[in-house]
Image: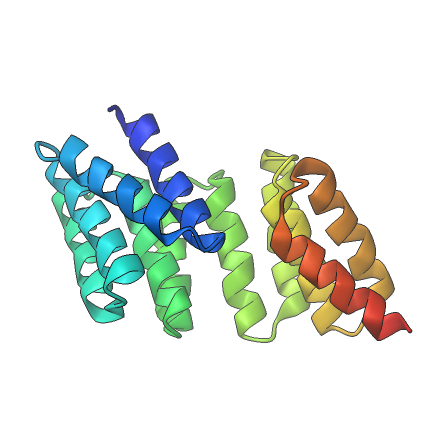
Length: 192
């Protein structure tokens, strides 16, 4: 598998676990570990996926994501992944610094720009978060995650009518975006 295939596999693994398909996700991780035996950075990455998704060991997952990044410091995918792990584990300012490092190298990395928006939203800076999501959409105008996150920020700001439009846009690009569906329902309920 080449780098693109491996990143796509990581997205598929996330999708399996997001949908609660533990056996499908576990099998995908096992295949990825086998396929990356001779690729130390990606192997460490998929070991981290196993630590987090299968063993529920967040500390080990973080250590292995950092190991993957150490093994291939030029690959921004690994550096961004470290930032995402920091963000998901409440280390928001560390994540902002990590995302800043990625953006200093590639200012047009739409995924990292969106992640920076999520970090600012976690810091209750939702107006600023929205600017990051909008910047991400200028680069990747079909990013359903960015549309959904704009909706989440508007909802947090109490602007549920505006949020509805963004959740609907997210669903236009990804009709299986269950988070957008759930958030749409919450915003509808808030307007009643």
